[in-house]
Length: 254
Ligand code: NDP
Ligand code: 8X3
Picture 1: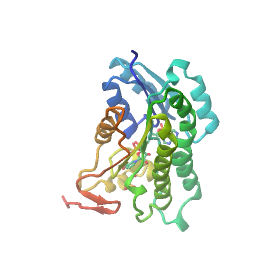
Picture 2: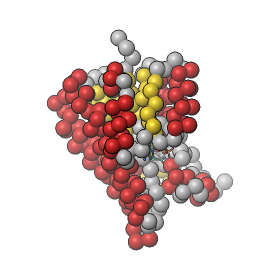
Picture 3: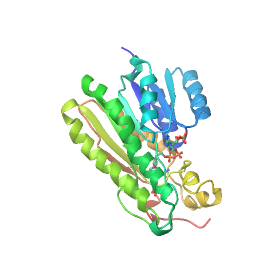
């Protein structure tokens, strides 16, 4: 039997990259996606050097047509996806609604919500035919609680939570597992992207405590996908030990 296939969106950095590597270690074949072609090629070479058969697919997940073309371009045998990791996402800005740039709202809504829908609609039909599959969404503590300036980002992650629950019900008759990991603060490129390259502002987010690392989330995802087929982990909230809520972080001064 051939090794199972996982498709990871947003594999060019952070959680997605760590998840791709963890799944490769676990014997999966990988489809890695994202917009940054150079990073996809570098990861693809690395996966190959690990003995992991892989395909890279470069597209903007906000663009439904481009996502569909990318899917159609995959070899037929690669479309039998066992695990779909809906990870690609971002926050843009942290201002109150009346001060925010509406283009940032569009980017978050189009990536974090429409992106999940754009790829899921292509992968799910095959899973239904095969009567198996696992879909894992990367939500957030921001999908459980609001926090200052979190407004639209939080709304998109509440939507991820709603999609997780609803898709779980829709896919119940087909033996497809749907679950979510909701992380707290993690030191990926997330804050650099959120603050549009302002490294000092990004670094301040993680000052005075140890945040989660991408590999922590990859390990949790591995636990979820490696359960026996009759077990579906629907929801896991993972926080740094020093963080007890979206805006409740214990920081030391040194
Ligand atoms: P990173 O910025 O490190 O990674 C984000 C990934 O998403 C990149 O691979 C990026 O690829 C991809 N992506 C963003 N926009 C698009 C797009 N339009 N089309 C395709 N791919 C896209 O951040 P994280 O690893 O932290 O983020 C991963 C997920 O985790 C996100 O959904 C985020 O909301 C969530 N999260 C993050 C937390 C944190 O504190 N870091 C905590 C809780 C949840 P590229 O730029 O190449 O397109
Ligand atoms: C990312 C973590 O706390 O900035 O989802 O919302 S937070």
